[in-house]
Image (tube, rainbow, N blue to C red; front, side, top):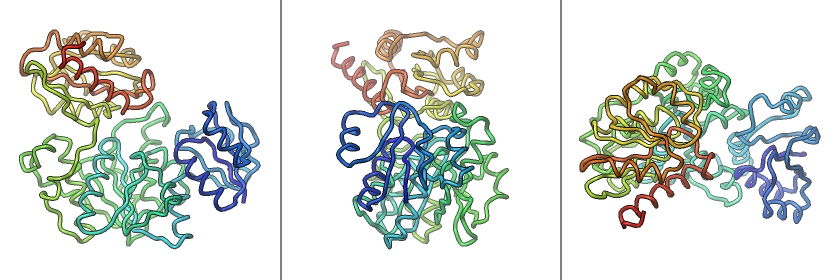
Length: 425
């Protein structure tokens, strides 16, 4: 069997190690320049490769394993399909390999536009009170790493993206969930229908004895339930904000907890809010950074689309100074503007997202400023903020204009705030 790895991201690097251990023939094709360590690894292991673009060499294989970021209408993939070459990606390739290795965990897969990482982490946290579970996928832990590290558990919890689902071949989780669907990644998906269809692929290969858990308030989900063959279970939404542990008392957390509770109870276990008291919030998601001169700072760098910003902003009254930054995703910002008028004193905009936002802000009675950097935005907002105000980074855009990822952006923001606190800005 000859494999081509289309893209050498973190997932395909792990798959490469696994395939080499199996003695398989592998060709690597990447559209970017490979770093020196990757190039040395490939040469040392006699792996043929190309960089700075894909050529027809990728078609000289039996299976092409696609990195999720490869565009859906890649012409070489179209040609490969016509030639009968198998197209697959990490999540479906790895879950099938687990079976070949004699491991068949109960697979819980979660997708959605916002809140996936917090929800899978919460499910993992509560489930481990009863059994052993592993967490992997789009949360930053490649599923393929489990092949190489020989980690095993009763449950495997996966966060999966629309890109991963689009490229997956026959992914069949025992329990699937769609948290929510909002316009997102429309700079990759050609339209909303394409995006929704990719999300619903999470349930496409499920059977009647499997479970599909969904948000009963989401119209995109409700309209497509007819395509789901598995047992359909709506979220149990009976909690109020005041019932949550204090460190989780944010409006968007209610959805995460409702989803977690529904999963735990669908598996036959008891859900108790006490189990969340020792749950550690993920960084860069409504993360309190510091209070300086009575002004509180929050880092919400993970908010990379409009709906995530809306959910964050709605936690505050009319005392918010918001920083948005990064690369926009061709979204409609009308609803965001309505929320900002109600909750925000001012808006600071950094980076290319300004071009996306500006047409929606003109003549809307929203005070907004343009800055060249996040540090400049923080310093200027701090100079106009009053005691009791909040300054929050909730960018609404991707980080790649200035940072490696949203984590690096969030860490930079926190450093700026701590310097401000120490009087070093």
